[in-house]
Image 1 (cartoon, helix red, strand yellow):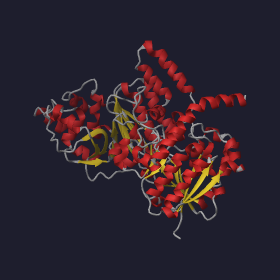
Image 2 (tube, chains in turn orange, cyan; image 1 turned 60 degrees about the horizontal axis):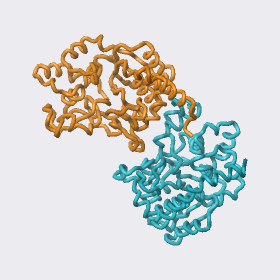
Image 3 (cartoon, rainbow over the protein chains, first blue to last red; image 1 turned 180 degrees about the vertical axis):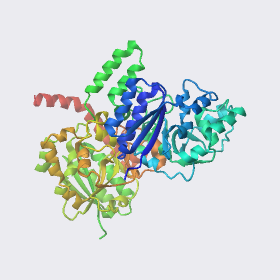
Image 4 (cartoon, rainbow over the protein chains, first blue to last red; image 1 turned 90 degrees about the horizontal axis):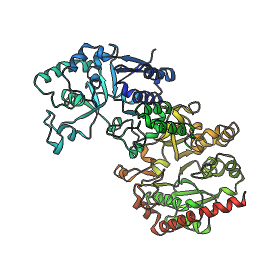
Length: 299
Length: 294
């Protein structure tokens, strides 16, 4: 009997190829069911060298990697004419809204993860969670008041009441059939026509509006936002490096920043760092890389 | 007589005060302090420091048994050949000798590191149903990195990355299962074939020996690196790994003030003076040793 696959979707552009690799590798390292994992990678044009690194996951762990270009999907292109994007929130962040249309029909349940996460415990703990008949399961966003209502918790006039529970959309467990039945594109079109989309906080607020009181809460351990060193002892399942500090930057001070470098692998970490560093600083990166590679491990 | 609760600690003379605090925290948080039997495996221990430890018997009626492991040729042999732990000294290997040094009457033993403070009745875990497993312990939140090494690859041939890896600071031991594991033989083999050089001291070795054969305890029974921010979580057993030690003034350690009172203020201050004197004289002692052993 064939094993039950664990479907995981990531969406990213070429700027996030290395963090995506770290997410995938963290999942494979911490799950004994790594060969059952199917990664659905939704991305825009990816440099061939970067795509080759991502495909190494199959070689190292036996997981399946499938690539998708959402730009080839007509519904996605249509949505992009309605939705607001910025440098920080490029079109690719909206891919999660159309996952049910992108992945193959046999996928019944799928996990969506942002690429600034690291999985610390077996992903099947999340995958096998009882969704209570809801289309999605997600973790509460502790910063929801400021996100939804802005300065003095009154400057933004969104349709979300502060008394409603509000989730972070970086970690989602999706029931494909119920998600599709929600008709997200239709609801977004209706919001656009009524003028509601202007001030919406990107995909997260759209999802919170559409799934208002219709989502299954997950434990905080499944989406630990802005994790710092005290979180390390608290046995998190998924760390979500939101905020300005990211583990792929040196001296970030975030939780498990050293572990993250080894999960990403030193080779990918320093290649990614060099790509983002001005040419005049490259010699410093090269020295740091050499020192790190020669250092003894753990003792 | 009620059933005894056997507790083991291993420490050298520089850790006598934290060992005292660990023992006193156990006694303070159980009503069964008269059932406690402390097995103290120590290296050279000054009479003054031993007198401090003896006060536990006076105050709580617990039994103390001392084991001078430096006087044991077996320990000297192991400690001289195993990789040296520069942070904790080779006292870390003392727990591997339990099968040889504990009397047969000890059927169940709870081992604790000396950088711990217990905040709940120890019998909750000391007498836990082990469900047929030889040991019980708590998963180490840093286990993935410790067990996998560089790029999560360098020790893949030794440890499966998705396996749980326990922290060896707290181990509830079924002595029969522990004896049947033939730990010293495994250590000898690991030293002979060079594997020990790749391991994170005794903790890695124990994780190899008991791989997938240990009972997982809740994290509250070995809360690693507890900071003040963790206090509302009310952990039952604090394990002060890392640099934030509760005996250091100003450390960001959970329940730091409680710890001082558990150690008692007199000993806390005396231990601080002891460390200052030791740290001040360290360069001089190092210099003398270099000349002497050049």
